Length: 110
Image (tube, rainbow, N blue to C red; front, side, top):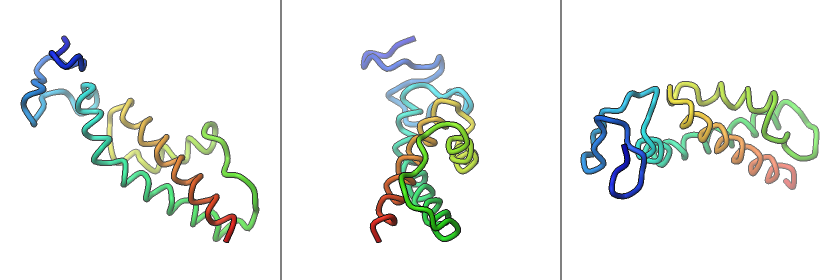
């Protein structure tokens, strides 16, 4: 089902209503976007804290590991408490990884 704003909507989800009836582990597009907007700062802060923690333990220089593999697994564990929805989870993982890399680059020049 699609609303007039061309956002995919789960049956039972009315885009005009703030409270949605979609399942928490299968969010509609609107709920993914809304919830990501609410939680992206949390993921960013966790990413920055992660980079700082790694820097205190590992004096190595160079770029933050590319997103994927072990880095993505660790990032996923850091946001697992924020959502049960797979799509939202992956957006939060990417956000966390992005901010970890940004903070790592800042720490690398300090």
